[in-house]
Structures are given as structure tokens and as C-alpha cells.
Amino acid sequence: MTIKRTMENDSSLLTVSGELTSLTVEKLGSEMKAALEDVNVNKLIFDLKNLEYMSSAGLRVILETKKMIDDRKGSLVIRNVTDEIMYIFEITGFSDILNFE
Image (cartoon, rainbow, N blue to C red; front, side, top):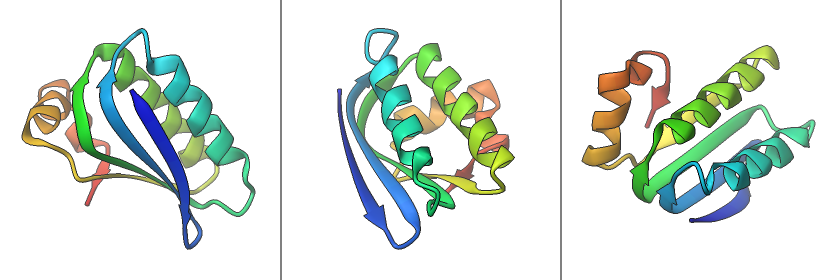
């Protein structure tokens, strides 16, 4: 899995590629925490266009991030979700609590 972190206005953009599994989830968690350490960031965006697979560990870290950013009165947006990954969000109920672009 690769993660590219960039700034987009007052948002931190994390572009995630590859497979998000229990073996790679710690890397994503570290990148998300680093992105949220910037006091100017009000919005965190995940671009999942090139994410091929996501396990329950990936869902857990996304949920933890949503809780952290909600506590800051910020927003989390999921962008460019493939049909396969959206199916995972839908069957787990995450599609009801996350914002998608």
C-alpha cells in the first residue's frame, strides 16, 4: 500500500493505493494522525481511486479517524470510491455514516 499526503486548501488529502489490510493499516493510521496534527486542517479527504482491497482493519481505522475529526468539528470525506470498495462500505453500514464525493 502507498499513501500520498498533500494539502488542498484547508484540507489534507490522503491518496491511498493498493491493499488496506491488517498488515498495512498501521501506516494509514500514522499518516492520518500526522495529517490531523496540523491545526489548520478542518477537512480530511481520502482518495480511494486506486484502493484495490480493504479489510475490516481498514474499516476500523477509518471509523477511528471519523471520530477524531468529528471531535475537532471537522469533516471526513471519502472520494473516488470503486464499486468493490463501496460495496464493503454498504454491507457494513459505513455508507450511512461517511460522506462521499
